[in-house]
Amino acid sequence: MKKNIIKTICFVCLLAILLGSIHAVFQFKYSDGIKQITQFYKEKENSIDVLLLGSSHSFLNIYPEILWRDFGYSSFNLSASLQPMWSTYHYLVEALKTQTPKVIVLEGYRLLEQDDYASRGTIIKSLYGMKWSKNKLEALKASTYRKGTLDNENDLFTSAELEEFEQLPFEFMNYHSRYSELNEQDFLPYYGDPSYEYYKGGMVGDSVYDEYEQPDIESYDKEPIPLSAKTEEYYRKILELGQEKGIPVVTVIAPFYILNQEYRIFLAAEQIAKEYGQMFVNYNELYDAIGLDFSTDILDAGSHLNRCGAEKFTHKLGQMLQDNFDLTDHRGDSRYQSWEDGAQRYTRAYGTMNGLTEIESGADYVNHLLAEGQYSFAVILNGTDEGVSDEAAAQINAVFEAMDIPNETICDGIWFFENGKLQWSNTDREGFKKAHRFDRYHDVRFEYGITAEDDESAGFFIRNDTDSVIACENLLTIHAYDNFSCIHADTYRCDADGVRK
Image (tube, rainbow, N blue to C red; front, side, top):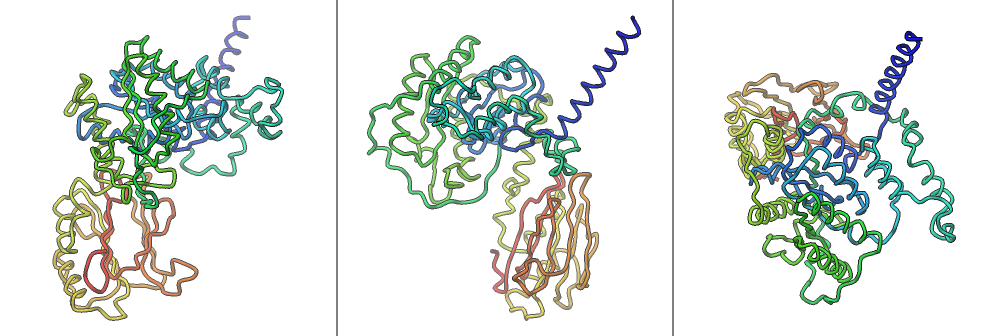
């Protein structure tokens, strides 16, 4: 009998390990929901002072790296795309199991939610990354419609949607077919990207959407419009939970192209926050104070902020936190090294810390890369057979002088530097392929050929570790990689006029 019990226990343990391994491989790995909460579970207990909650208007608009860089605040952006207030409430319940933040910042864009149930994709991104617990079951219950609850359900949902609701609590039914999509990253720690070791939930967007003009808030009707009943219920739950735990909850509305009706709903939400004695800041009333420019700082038609706008907004948010709360500047504290590493990766990846984007001269650019010692880079020439102007020739000769390489004849080729030294060079064309591996997860490949079907001209180009092609159609291209994060840091380009593009 005792042996049978031991065998049973061992079997159950092995089965649990096997199922856990299968789940880790097959589970969805969305970067706008799943990855945030998965990484959150890895944070040390009570290490997060500022807990950021909300939807994509939180993770695209508020950068923990900037809150650390500018103020030394340990923050985490625990959010997911289109996340409704009921899912945000259960995220807060989950977060407070291991963290006691000094302040909770709720980005309240989804206070506009009018529906009582989220879509399948929203539920998956919000809840499938959560660990199984009573809280997760309650979150799924709040998010999914139960067939037969309403008499008019066939008017509200299609038969396929009703079937999806029934399947959503059973995760394996939704991701078991992913076997055809699996790749190497599904089996590797941190999704094949070691930078996730210090990932804090934010996401950077670099596009510019310039179709919007700044809203004229002053002309808007100021009569509040009530929140939907379910949204208000869970917004109050969030405020009440913070009150119960003695943690202030600050509701912020990140800048976006706000319509009058949306503004009026936020006015009603502000009244609710004041009932609980909590702060509510609608940053759409503070465009000028932020320094926001709708022609340069908007990412997309959903009016999220791009990197330029998000940096401005995050800094302004940090100033508000600094002025109103007693938060600790943890910079220099080794216990918070992952925040420091994340901030360094951010600044290096986007070329802001060492001013790469501001350098106009190719020679100065190379000298900067060599002096810093933290970059690998490739100098690529294409199209020299078509003739080179005196201005461009002077630029190229200055670059080669900076690299300490004699350049008697200007010709197409690639010169690759690492740790301040020339590692290899190539001027052969047909059939040329050469790879460089930075670490286990990141490599870059250099090739010669045609990069697009509709382009008959061949040239040297780059293929990165996601197999994306980076064309080097300019006369001179200098492609820089950060040795710390092993990712692309910046690119310098110039054409026949010798001027940086």
